[in-house]
Image (cartoon, rainbow, N blue to C red; front, top):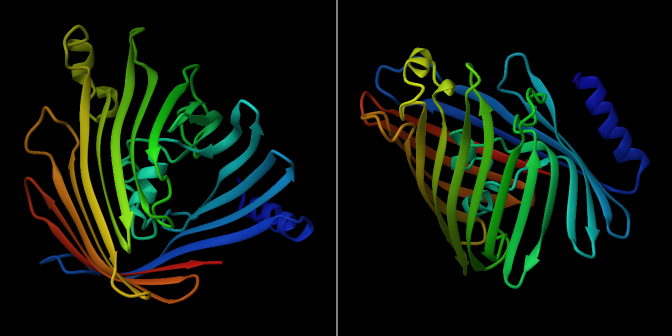
Length: 330
């Protein structure tokens, strides 16, 4: 969709209605410390989110959000949310283009989206938003949600008849960024994928996560397994030779841990450590990813974070980057 149409629409809504308009901007400076590295130094505008929300009547509200990916060439503007929420007596229904229920709680446990995507998002286990319908509510002490979506994400149109089913179950505090408490949860998704020769396979994703926050300390972790067809891999020739053997799919795995601690009201230390294996049946193909940094909060709406990042593959040379990240919210 064209820049002008999206931006004109959202600004028109903001001016003419009684809802709330907000923005979120991520940008950074990167310096490549890797030995013999190519020139990879400079400033970058990573993401710009523009959001408009409004409550139309009791129980009915909507959200309209754009996602501007400034790293893409050419620059891209997407609709990431265009949804209506209906709070009914039997639960909440969300209709339209909306955020997924796959890693939204784990992303808050991590807490620093402006420094980097949460692990499942970073390693592309699932899109962060999709077109569909969600039903959510609370059963005793368990919060649950069920989604049926296209499965193609928010950047692509639907391309087949199959739909993605996503479930999430959470016990405890769901927003550890702002509140003390703890949570544990489970996510599970399944989508049928059509191969050639009239064969089908399933993409399945299971994630376990948990987090704890108290007196300025926040810790969390997750374990995720994503099983998907080998058609997702570049080398497709072996699929049809081995269609009746157990070689038509692979399992990718993530183990991640993250923590932060408020040293003062303006300073916060943080660390994150990922262990990612793109194929658990192949060795050596995994890697580890470490972020360590310090958040500085100079004023409301602004965070400045000097940090260093180490990527270490099981085989081959690793990389080291020193970064200065900024987050601005209004």
